[in-house]
Image (cartoon, rainbow, N blue to C red; front, side, top):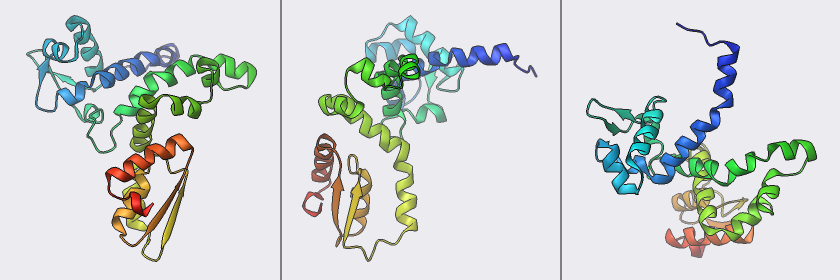
Length: 220
């Protein structure tokens, strides 16, 4: 078995952004969602997502080499355990995180030299404002951010609600409660409990929408 040389290992690190962008494009196009019903060719997928079929085929082959998607002997692609994580409806879905990381955060990381030289946030140089001000003004990116945070931290919610006894709590406050995913879970399990969600105004408004959709707005 070949042991990578230091140069090969460093080369892999240097080109890591290739993988970031390849996963981003797959997430942005929703390819994993398209493959839920079974294998498809690059031509079929390209027609469905308005992409250039030969280029999409190369992207899929590259991702398959990393274990994201699998290609059969008919040049059709199917889901793998890694690709399943890019499905929009997967538990702990990483699709939103891939999109966020491949868009505004990717651009901000391109200004890392500026941050190291000045001590100032790269995001503010790239976008002209702090990240949460940006999200307050860009609803689509804010929704992606919320979904990404659920993908990162959502798996902790079930473990916490199983391990902790909330039954004696009449009012539960979630400070920095984001889109309310955690609080809605706890309130849903404890019908007598009231909730308080505290966050920035734009974030709280997104949480209010979620609470209304789950029928819990009158208790929070």
